[in-house]
Amino acid sequence: MQDVVQDYYGKQLQSTADLKTSACCDISNMPEWLKPLLANIHNDVLSRYYGCGLVCPALLEGCRILDLGSGSGRDVYALAQLVGETGHVVGIDMTDEQLAIARQHQDYHVDKFGYDNVTFIKGYLEKLDELALADNSFDIIVSNCVINLSTDKAAVMANVQRLLKPGGEFYFSDVYADRRIPQHLIDDPVLYGECLSGALYWKDFSRLARGAGFLDPRLVEDRPLEITDPALAAKIGDIQFFSATYRLFKIAALEDACEDHGQAVIYKGSIEQSSHRFDLDKHHAIEAGRVFPVCGNTFRMLQESRFAPHFEFIGDDSRHYGIFAGCGELMPFNQSVTLASELGGCC
Image (cartoon, rainbow, N blue to C red; front, side, top):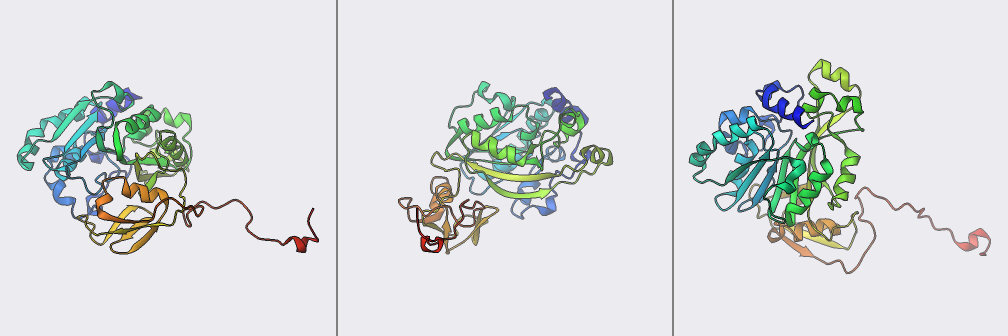
């Protein structure tokens, strides 16, 4: 399958327009602050973009970032502007043709940005341990519609955990399915190359993340994908696909459920582009200046990451009040109380 993917993205696809799904994001749907950054990127790089989401989280200045499956370098060059001269972005890809585009225009972007802070490396996502990348050396790892193409997703996740600094995050977009994909579709080279048949069943992704030590994956945003090619749609049948962005924090103390310790945070409104509200994920829109009750995991994600200076923290984990209300998990026991006297006595 690695040979199939290299051929598909190196030779079969010549531009974004060749894709047979609605995976690629429409620039009109992007936040306004990101559009000027993309305008600084060379057209040849932009034309070979095959991502399915946005991988530009907030607060990146000075960060060291790793882009898994960097392709022609669009996200690398966007992130390079956000980390600034004191930061650095490393892009890894296995496709020679894509890497050639990224490297060919590196000088163009140095002139455009005024500094050189990117590195491109040829490598396989399943074999990150064979590259000269130090443990605990990246603040953030990103990936844009590439993990589904990997033939060993567990190895990728394990290496992401190893390479992230404590408090760092894996912020990535990918394609997921509403069920497990049958083998005959996985073996289809076009379906695989189109980021469909290699997609994980969403529940299996959750299990995989937890197995790698990311105990509380947070969904940031999602949207259904349309299969625009009739022949592919006929093969897929009733399987539904979604583009989704997740953030996974490398924090050792995270629990596998949202526990209530009576804690809360107050967002200071001090992050650029998010002065009124900070969106940690799809279910945590934290308004500036307002006391916002949070579970223990959310408290730690904010307190033990690069976001800490932008929040006030209320409480600790010395007391426990059970599962956090509204987290989607319910206590399994019947909570109705029946007095022994009503049962005619006790035994």
